[in-house]
Length: 34
Image (cartoon, rainbow, N blue to C red):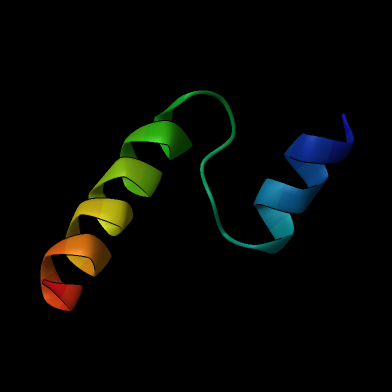
């Protein structure tokens, strides 16, 4: 799938595990912005 290729290119785990990473990132960004 194109998404899998994108994930591989971006060194992001394919599947649903990237959702957790996105949520962590959003939490960090939102908390740092105050």
